[in-house]
Length: 149
Image (cartoon, rainbow, N blue to C red; front, side, top):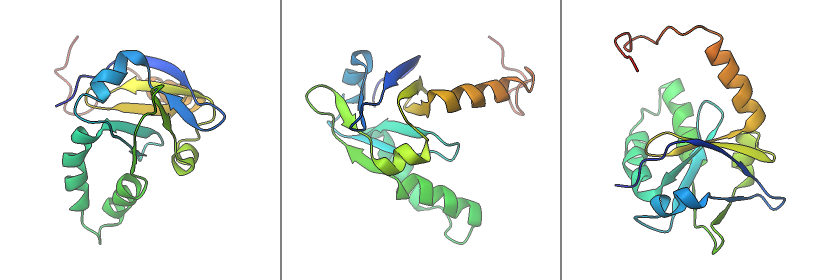
């Protein structure tokens, strides 16, 4: 499908709630269509997918069991906040207010590549979560004991 998204950059949310997609990522994000998908992530950020990459995930989420409390909350976040956006001629997307509130986005937004998508974090929230995660030591999580760089 789309490109491989990597790297971390800070982008600015303007006063109108628009975010300019960095030029180096724009073509890959829009490779298979002009629409992007934004939605809430349970960790407190927003994810940004090319629409073609999002659709298979959406199909899985729709099948989450409705009577399982945790699955229902994930479904509420992932589908309930789902927004399809089209960049303007300057490569900006209008960031919906509900998603800005969910991720506490104000001005400086950290854009973190995750392979098939980007995570968008408020820079202050990102720094706090990153520091908390790294303070737990460098032991890999279960299932990654054999991983090495």
